[in-house]
Amino acid sequence: MAFKVDDSCIGCGGCEFACERGAISQGDGYPVLYMVDPLLCDDCEECVKVCPVDAISENLEFSRCYGRGCPLSSKKYAGWTCSVGVSRCEECGSMIWTSPSGMEVCNTCLGKSQGRHTAQCPKIKKVDRAIHLSL
Picture 1 (tube, rainbow, N blue to C red):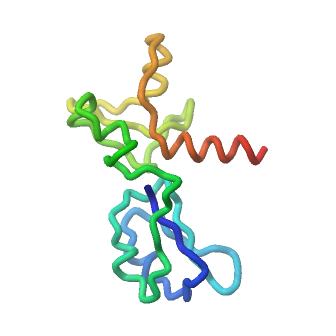
Picture 2: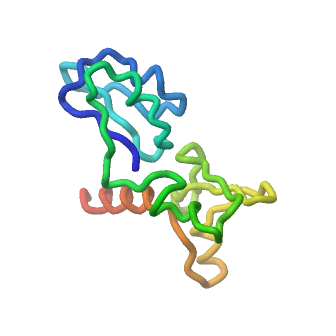
């Protein structure tokens, strides 16, 4: 699902410090507001716990990693893990998934090469759609 920071942010930086994935960074505006990169956010909620003004909330536009909407929550992908934005396919930009045997694959490109439909990360789809609409 990822998170978002609203206008009540006081710019203390606690959320950025608490985020081990580096998904939170300062925005360019003044006063300093923080932004969450939904592709790097793994929904750990550490930022929510440290925010003194409760300025961080769920971004319902994105599905929760390994939760409802994420293909890796299904039995079909039991044992698979996701790079959660750290590694993306050079060819198509999709998340890199790691199989139970330890092999890293792009499930999107793998499906295309085998002529079948495969599950994709819904966060990537959402971001790709937003980029396409802005062009």
